[in-house]
Image 1 (cartoon, rainbow, N blue to C red):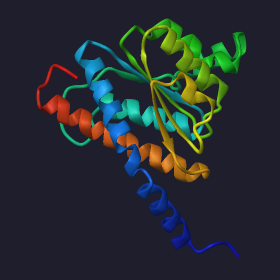
Image 2: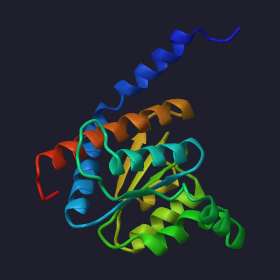
Image 3: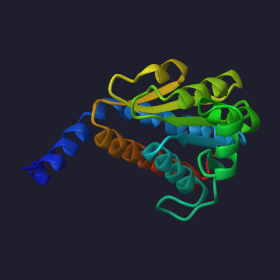
Length: 193
């Protein structure tokens, strides 16, 4: 027989409580994004599978709105164009999927967010490494011990769990925290980051 459903809730709550030490880093990421936006920069996000959905969710919250009415913010998920994704995957390699897009779109001062629950997705690592070479601020959302992606991230938000579902749940929570801070910044009318 499978575990009772309340065990999943307890596991979720236990991991969420462990995020408290990460809050200063979450705040730093929000500030880095606000600073980039104030300077005319953009936010790019990417990941695979559920992390691709989280990247799309993040970009949509920024371009659309989070909880309060405000101006649209320049953000894009590099996972949403099937023609580009299949072209790069076919003509180059799946490992080059995000790096190729980053090289064509990202400018110094932009913020690039790579999401990988394991921290070892080659295409996410290469995408963040390309962003760093271009002078972008790099952010990794990952889990477990962080994986290889932390070596190419200016900011690494590492969820202290080995369970993919819990890591993804905490990524969404942190994305929402960041969006809340960005909304605060925009609505305060600040021009600095």
